[in-house]
Image (cartoon, rainbow, N blue to C red; front, top):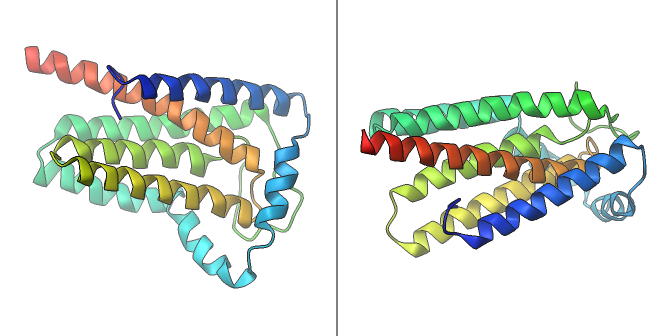
Length: 212
């Protein structure tokens, strides 16, 4: 994903801002969403036998899961690619994104769904940290991977796999009944906004270092 010379990036940014603001205002006002009921009913039809799979998937968006994957990615960036700026940018964007998510949770203060939780939770509900921080980390990783790729097909594969992974992580939070669908949607929206800013700053620093 490029933040300059790519109209789609700005279109997605505009939509993400609108979605994030709209849902945040309604949640803060304690209004209800029809989409929460509709999607929750839809995901309720997922067989219980698939819960172990979604518990595994949801771990990839958890702090421990992201931490393990991040360790692997950082070793690859630092030792294999010698990409110190990329490693620093990925670490900072993910770490700071997590802190922003905490601030948003405390500010909105939306309780978890009043349902049986099939996964451990110990924080507030809005926005989903798995969706927000997961999007920042996995898409920034995908962006850094694409930098060294010349094949358009390979780049499309990386993006497709990343999107599918994030959709599964988002779905797992609803299926395991620990988030409202709007928590996940807003999490993706806030995550994209933070990702956009992170990559924009990363590109600026990268250009300045090249000139220096």
